[in-house]
Length: 479
Ligand SMILES: [Ca+2]
Image (cartoon, rainbow, N blue to C red; front, side):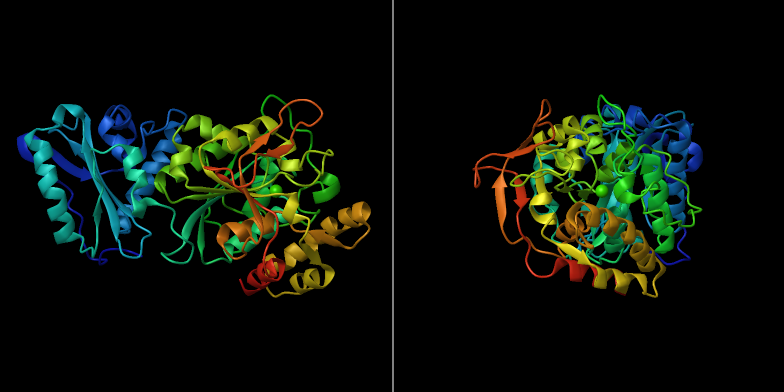
């Protein structure tokens, strides 16, 4: 949705006192020293948290340029607004003005502006304080812009009621980031997410698990292209678990290519230049207090993102994890479920972080099954992505026939996706704190404290209401 008429002309230059001026940011601004403005700014604390700076230390010049080009294109398309403040000769960047589209139904955009410390309290800052709201009111006819308060601590800002997680379907789609190891059941989950109006898939990071992280990204991009969504960015994440080496995945379950030997046409879209954890952190900063994280592979990337951005647990209000076996045995050892057991150290970090976690483990995923009749519905569907899933699932069914003797599969990742989206509802849960065993025979085991523990942040799903598998497949078929 463009905010302005096509014939609207952005001002190329806005003059401010003492020779200062604003102009739109450009892709060629890659040499500007943005960290000098942002990275050390306590005033920016009010917007993205203390660790926020741009570009991130790990960002390459090419990635920075790409990001600036993205902003330039958004400005040209009247989709966003990113102006830079300079002195006369543009020798240094002195501040920024940024308008961010809001997902709240009642709010058009959140608007912030800031300057280097040296200009705080000067006539330049005073001019911005007067000029930006007037400019927004006159040239950007928003119904309800929100001006981000610039001098309050992040914790206070994040705690404001309107910054809390938005319930799905109430105020437009919730931005959702997926971390996965695509994977047959990951593929079903991706098709389901793309068919779910409650969420907007804003990015995917891949991790080694069912298959290696690069193959998982290739599979993800191919699926996205098949589903008509090649625009969703996909970044390759960790290729090895913390302190170890990837063991080759689970070809006996998911086939050698991760998707049951089904040959999908490779996407023409490239993998995103950032690493998986970098893309996650970037999207968390773009949607502070709103992003929902769904992790359906080993937690190596999520742990790395937590280390890279100490504010991540505040920026991301909800995380849903497919993993663990709290009240039942594991599936790779008597104790460990695969996603947790494949990187127990990373899982321990993720469960120790200060955020709300919905745990969708073997406790509930082994109770829900996809039957042959349902697979046939996918296989014979008109939608290419549904038919591809039907073909992939044959391999998955084969593994479960060997291990359980029945021609059907439990539903792991898609069930986590349905619970994350709100398409399925939990019935019985434990409200508790989960810890992960990282050493010894029980390595990878998920251990729950007392149910109903005061202040507990983890919800372990034990059963689900209704027919979530029917819901998932119906959505995928409907597209
Ligand atoms: Ca998975």
